[in-house]
Image (cartoon, rainbow, N blue to C red; front, side, top):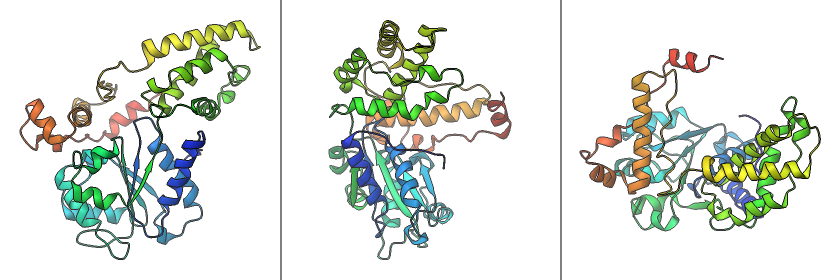
Amino acid sequence: MSEIKFIGGAMRMQAYNKLKVFLANPGKFCLIVLGDRGSGKHFAIECAFKEIALDAGKDLCLEGLTFIEPADLPEESIKLNELFKANEYKTIVIENVEELTDEQQRLLFKALSTSDGTFGVDEKINLRIVFTSSKDIDSLRTGKDLLGLFWDRISQLVVEMPSYKKDGSEILKDFYSTWEKMNFEKTKGYKHLSETPKNVKLEMFLEDNAEKFEGGFRDLDKIACLYFNYRIFHYGNEKRILEPTEKKVVESVIDDFFSKSQMLGGSGNDESIFQFEVGLKHHELLGRFKMQMRRWAVKEYDTIKEAERKLGFKPGSMKNYVETKVTTNAKKKLNKP
């Protein structure tokens, strides 16, 4: 796993420290990590796993980390056991748990029934299971998004990553941590522009608009990148940080972020824009489009069943909307300089 470090203010660090403890719980109880999109669930799990895996033994099932989307999770017990077996002594993270079909939930319910810390339907295997969701906890536990019995089984331990919509008081700390994470000083020829920005207008912009940052930490990444690149644009050959030029940089960042960089408001469904990739065959593009449409539909209509009804699909049609694997030739094309 690449070198990564968790960042954030006090509330975010408190949630992260809780995650580390729960992720390594000796009983291997199920853990669900909640938080709005962009709150850093995936990143937090990666960082926490890296930290605790250093001192963990084989019995804690922390020898590897595998992230799985619902569309890639089997609905048959034999295939689920094969997946478990391939990840023995590892931790499986099932992301976007609310997108699981009823069949997948029932199968997992059986597989997660344990008295000795092992999991599986036909064969018991040593591994650890974690789930994530961007849904509100009330919609998950009231049966709106998940079967009641399934929620009861997977919610033994719960961690929620904070979002700026609920509390933006630490956004400045988070932004400066994000800037540090970017390592702009390593950019050849521009070390002189990597100094952390200390600008009142920027700080006011971040604090005043915290609740509008739908993308959470991803939005802070964008703002940091915009700031650094607009420094390159506005400073030219100038080698010193100057207040008048910083003012131009901030104005450019603010203008670009809300008018161009941030997603257009509406339903808040970030799956609504499909990006085509050069080098992929038509069936690979179609596979990716179908998978994204399924994710978009679930976020828009809450469940696969309701999405199929609203969109005019036959029942069960969208469960097969999974991503087509990229061919070797396509990968070569994509990796060409």
